[in-house]
Image: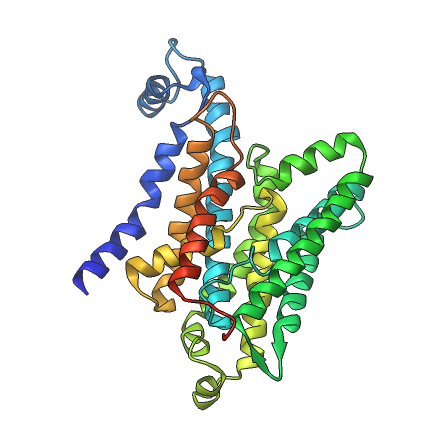
Length: 337
């Protein structure tokens, strides 16, 4: 118990140094570690930068390029992690995530549709189609008022395939200039991060996360099953719907600005659960902090490991796919489920 509390305290405090470290991380030679230290030192002492560094250039790189990307990566990672944790609780399934249920592909199709023809706002289109994809997966798997784990996963795979095919149609029909941006976006990328994108996604993401945070103790009851929830005086259908809509709002808004971050909402909740246990009253906030911090570290890694930037969605998929297979092996899922 003491070790768990100590670990929780560490996780609560770690995001701040990681965010600060990320400010010093980047490929720009004009914003090296020494020049950034000199910038902050001179700025704190005299309010201006010394002659040895370009004050305006350093300031632009830090606060117009790196800081919005850092905050956007943290927000997206936290949203996907909390959404995945909440969906796993209400479906009582350790293999559920926004990606597996088809939410990411549905939101991706909606966002690409809006990017190609701009008939409605990107965030609204991503939310509507993300919610539609999850609804398809849920009702396709539900049979005789019961929900099979295998059926849910298979229906999610089918729905993901359908919306991926529709996304391909959008790419085929869109003009070449918009096609390039859509293709880069579907890889899961933060290279277009800006204050405009952060401001556009912050409200829907935070709105969904606040609802999920307020529902955190109910997630523990819902995870026990519908009968136990009714015994506790909780309407399982209504509360599941609230959680589902909130998780869809947060994750679809994240997908609309960052693209498809594959399997991230699957692996991070399990990592948090392994560290601090399954209590959603504690793990909901920790999922946001650790999820945001972990994606930020991945993004730092993606833009510094090579001479070119590797999409974060590629890295998370390479991490998430083996982890998904491990979870399937561990939970012994078979046709009898």
